[in-house]
Length: 193
Length: 291
Image (tube, chains in turn purple, cyan):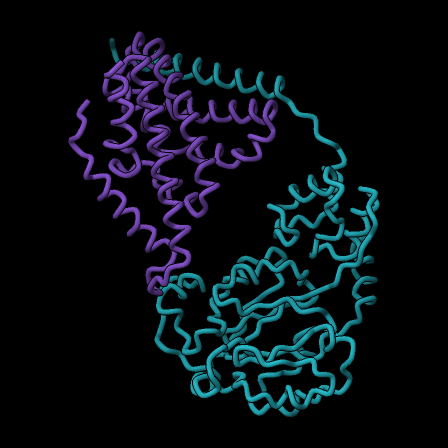
């Protein structure tokens, strides 16, 4: 149990995928303009990442390994995630229209996203068991949600600030992300998995 | 395994995996198929499909959906479609038809290359938004049109061109008043004005008169002569700029006195820039176009 909790905490804070590994930066900057949107995006990424990590583990261990085709992992995972997001979109659209109205646009953004692909790939690389990779994916998702929510809250406050002209908009957002990453650097080495 | 065996395994496994995903998706498409109100597609067909968002929705499809499903959404929100589309949408959705006031885009800047000074020579990406990032653009006046034609590129109806003098020209016949240009312009120099307005201010400079004078020969210096001279009190001074109230101007003015009083010519005759057709004429024309 302790091992899984460590893994979870490690992926949320210490090895935060956005702020220490710099994955998923496109949605991190794209959808962090308002707090509401960022919460939606964080939740969507967490659920998609968890489910696709589980599926990816199954495919990797029951399809790719027996046929000695592990060099195809990246290609197969891209295919898997893209079609899985499509499927999820259809299901949500049919059974939870309200949720679809909230998440619909984010789901499509996630279909081809590096952090969603990166987590299953790293899980496979680290030889995680099924449970370990699910927990690590939940942690990665929550870590992403934490980072994007922090960023969105800061950027909402920043709208009132007097930013120098050359830095307005994305410029200051990059600086802010750098500072956040520096802050998260303080956690490094606290947990080693 | 030999190379051949690996190649065959790759082919077989990838085909099967792809096939499996494809089948699942195809099955899901059938299983989770959602019936949509066919009226939505009919309404969407009527809309101009500029996807301009002037109605306040994400696109024509989103507006069609909203106007069919939600009884509170008005049938006249499509600005480019003007009266004919509003009437058709109202008929289809069973809502009361309301008037659409026809508008056109108007560039509030006359500071062409020969009339306004440049602060520096810009050689970067030929785009207004990019140029604005560099010290607010190459133009001396921080409020004027930069003239790289971001609005021209974004216009969904091909109604704009950039003149030799480095200012956008609006083709009033093609302009539908959707306001996309107004949204993309980093200097906020484009405004939507009602068709039939008599005069309009050809300047956007909120600087003090002295500064405006230095930077541009045709800028509004905020002297207020036009305010005093207008017999209908249709003009006010705001932020060192004369602001024309379009409603009073369209309905009351016959003499255009402000035009002749303006010392810099910033209140330029709108007659050459904005069509003087009456609203009914434009609607009739739109009707014939729609048919």
